[in-house]
Structure formats: C-alpha cells, structure tokens
Length: 64
Image 1 (tube, helix red, strand yellow):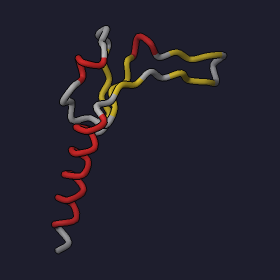
Image 2 (spheres, one colour; image 1 turned 120 degrees about the vertical axis):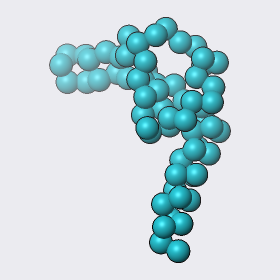
Image 3 (cartoon, helix red, strand yellow; image 1 turned 90 degrees about the vertical axis):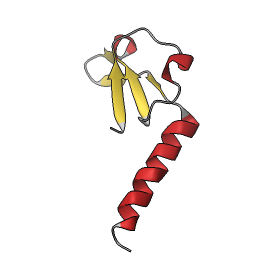
Image 4 (cartoon, rainbow, N blue to C red; image 1 turned 45 degrees about the vertical axis):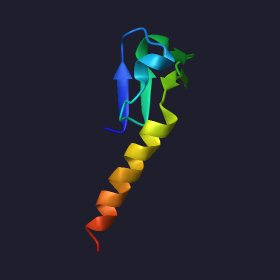
C-alpha cells in the first residue's frame, strides 16, 4: 500500500525500508475543534520514492 498506519510508538529508524510512501502514527494524530486534523506521519524518503517509481514503471510497461 501507499499509506500505512501504526499504533506502536516508533522512531524514524523503526521505519527504514518500509515500502509505504508514508506511515501515520495514530497515537500522535489529533483532531482539534472537530475541524482540523493534525497527523504525524513518518516516511523513508529514498525507499518509499524508489518503490513508487517501481510501481509507476510497472504500470507504464503495460502500455508499451
């Protein structure tokens, strides 16, 4: 998947080499005044980007 969630307490090194573009930390996510969502999300920039590029290449290959 492109987006993951976690309920575990994590630090950045816990999420190295995760294929998701972003992992939302649910315990730190808050709704303020019922209108605004504050979402804490972690990502592995290189790994997530490379995974999305691979996904894109596979989709494009279907059209060749």
